[in-house]
Image (cartoon, rainbow, N blue to C red):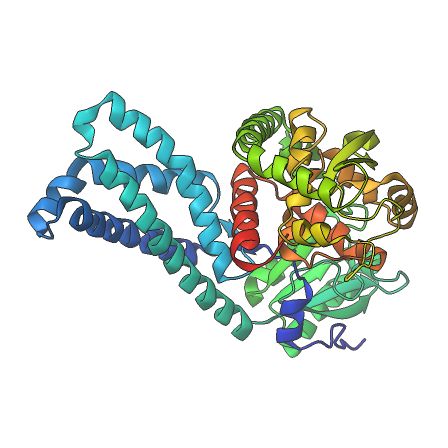
Length: 473
């Protein structure tokens, strides 16, 4: 039995392979570093804000400010950062994303602080100073985290992991070439008779020892066993892993990715696997998303009404036909609904998939598509509860039915309301084709499985920045 490289890509190529589905978990050491960097950046932001607002740079005045208001504000931000998971993991694909996440997290803390300082004025010398400090913290904390992001990425490049995958000799591996595993993992297969190794005979023990010898020989720091072992055999394997300083993981083939998380629960001497609905499907998440969706949609429709009217007039002046058009799309739980959009194509355009430099697009249509103005009428769909601000894009029924037959988990996209923007839209190119559906599905499922209120806010901030400063989404 010889272990050979299953993933022949270089570390750099593997790191780029996962595209828009990057999830980084921080080690305890990096958590401490990031928290320390945040605290220093927060204090620096308050110091600079004091100088700009109070026109003084003396350290004595700074101490008097941070004694109450500063410590209280910074403490609240650190707690919020911890509660939303910013010290446990990061979904940022690049350094710029760290700034978006920082803006989203700071926005969660500024409102309760302003309310508190208004109710108890003695806690703060100046609400203006607090607002300036928040703006500076966006640059300070976000910039510092961007630097840490680069440092972690460099470390990951240097510590590319090799994983020995113990696979049953008579069964094809369930992990494929990468099995959806982290891009920093290079998987090396090791064919073994796992059923025979599950016993407690001398031969079974020797077989299990051989796994870790192969791991040491090939420089692997983890052994991943495809399947489960009986308690006694599992205890022996865990002991071998601990002695050799090797991590041990089990990958039961029965537990494939699904719309549920799996948690371990113990009742007496029995270990139970408990399916738990994803966070995005919980009642609190439903309430938060609905509140955010309808509030922002109503305010946006009021604020953008002049732009909406001007766009409708421009479309009508360019040629005959309605300014708005409706198209049947698939929404939550597979229900159909009419999505509203500004018409950007000729009346005889049909329903074929849009392409780059599509000759069916009108002159006004090209402009409003570039800046995503054609999507704004979907705010009406959000008010009606048919769509969300953030979520997978709604697909036409014809394509949704076809893709559901091709991809087993395609229907999981319909567990949540479709969105005007989403994780896929801000991290992939705009003009996608049916051949991209597998990558789009992977990205949409990544969003659903890793949803948080902070993630929605950061996607909205990034969408706005991409439209105004970089490209249309």
